[in-house]
Image (cartoon, rainbow, N blue to C red; front, side, top):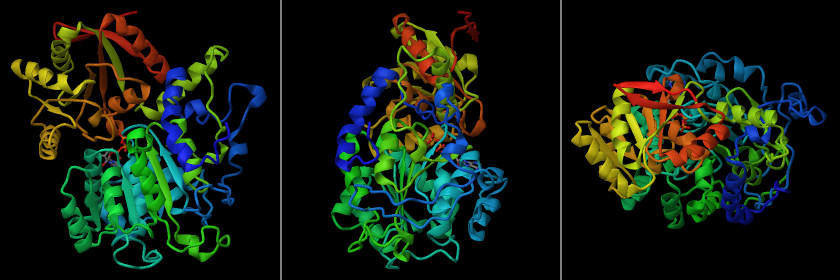
Length: 529
Ligand SMILES: Nc1ncnc2c1ncn2[C@@H]1O[C@H](COP(=O)(O)OP(=O)(O)OP(=O)(O)O)[C@@H](O)[C@H]1O
């Protein structure tokens, strides 16, 4: 496959189909399956060592690459990045060269030290590299891009940071795109937390479902430097000429693999076309000129990075780096096609890749179980499961919105406080429901895929799949709602007898043990198989 120069249109058209085809054939694509987690493959003849991918400790300086994207992103003058020393030795935020005001804010909000992915990503972004950030759910990817942005944009930034190209006050300097309203709002709150009450207006939410004219008025009145929103609303306001992003310096695509899905295709196309597109600039201007210092930096983020994302990054970014918890490597060094796990692959290679894949997208300490239950008994089994594990904060996933109400009704009838959350509810109901769940008023949140991505409820100690997820990528995001930032977490899958093979397949694809269990006499009993 020749993928590095796919046109945007081709990428948009084919990305989803490609991904779903791959998922069907080989299971979900993880970075491990791209051969990234081990620096030496098991095939000795074709072994690729890290040193070859990334000579010495330095990321190679950017080469000017034909991008085939009308030059939205021309070559950028980049600082070289020491990948083995600085990012991995950082013990505190101050070692990451963040500005003093930002460090003060982090301290007063109780953030003491960076997570591994933050230690790796912050220097990479600060060195003007485009990056793809991939690390497991709940590992702190939001701050990994938020902090370098606030180092260069807004009131906490380094004094030496430039004010952007035009210096026009109406210009947006950073656009963050997220696939759901809930996730968008959560990111806004994270920005507000770090900015502090006095500077909250530096960031503006542009999520769907909220009043559009109020958002437009706020843009006009507050002149925010940063906007966070859903693709539809950002594209809509941009198309109406009320959002000026041509001089934008940062574009972040959070949950990027979801943003590449068919549903968002047109809106994402507009965003990628317009954000950071300098009017009148020659995209192929002289290499290293000062003009390009302020070109758009693109940051793509997710716990799961299928091949469609690698391909999109190659198309839309300039010499992107892949940042994982303990590694920073040039995306260029990734093999240019998916690793095929066919019948000819040796079983050791296959299992090795799968184990590595799990380490990357799921928190390593999560415990996984499955429990065979008849359809009509599943909610009762859920109730027994919650009691047996003494779970305080539970997210139960179902595949069909219509069934959620019924499950909530049954739980409430048995004295268990539960509430439903899905996209058909009004925005006010959605936010009060989530608030109630977050502050512990409700024990079980019964929901669908809407809550699977990004939702951060630290207290959530149990995830139950009342219906099995459609594939391993969906499993990873659902499971990742628990066990966040090193906390304990349990995932229980309820399935009927004929579905056990699906659990076995997920287990194999994800490389985790999903143990058979039942709930008897108020206890979790793990069955020997
Ligand atoms: N350095 C840190 N110190 C303490 N808490 C942190 C730190 N970094 C992030 N957190 C907190 O950890 C939680 C999880 O972070 P975040 O939501 O960014 O994870 P994530 O990797 O994006 O997860 P997901 O893949 O599910 O979206 C958040 O509540 C965040 O505020």
